[in-house]
Image (cartoon, rainbow, N blue to C red; front, side, top):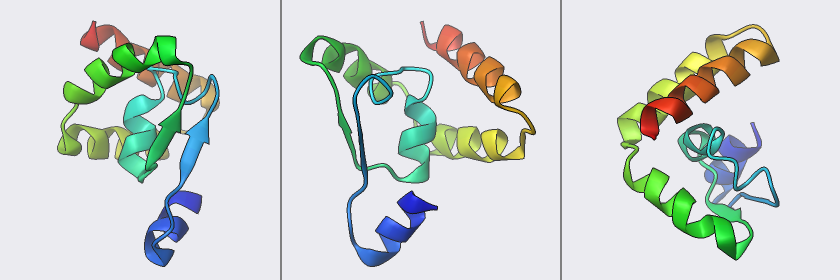
Length: 87
């Protein structure tokens, strides 16, 4: 909801810290409209590589699927599966 409200108001929304550098969460973050990910410099190359290998339609599918799940465990399992497929 925050990302959508930011988009509507023309305000960027960012995430920082270890959560921003979590490759499992990357497709979801970008798919919901997060504009900036602030992380340790040592993580930037990996996250940039992963971004290059995700299409906008794939990220939309990830968001739709995550929002259809009922538990955090289901979300974690699904995102971990995606991560393994990118390696």
